[in-house]
Length: 142
Image (cartoon, rainbow, N blue to C red; front, top):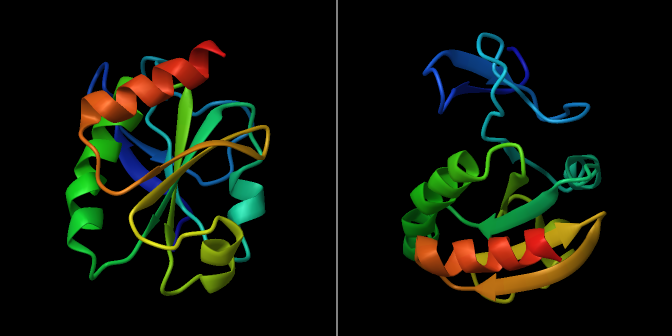
């Protein structure tokens, strides 16, 4: 099985495979526009997933969690809106207890924002896109 997720380019619509580990920022093979960067991480891969200069939004979630399922499409929208500026890293807390403990996921969804591997902000619970956009805009400006 090939590594990475298939992502449609927000600019031209062409489908691209975006691997979890990308040097630099993922871009469309056709039009060279930035692509949304959403990856799944595990206890073993979380550190390499955070190895980027971009702002990282870590989504600590579980498949049985209703609010987690509600926030998932919001995160996809934000990944597209902020393509080239943020990376979304999804961590299933049921399968990855060490990452859940490391990022203090006492309730889910927990969204942790990291820059250069350090936690800079967190949001607990499902929030609407405008609220999360405000957090992202503030963190990108700092």
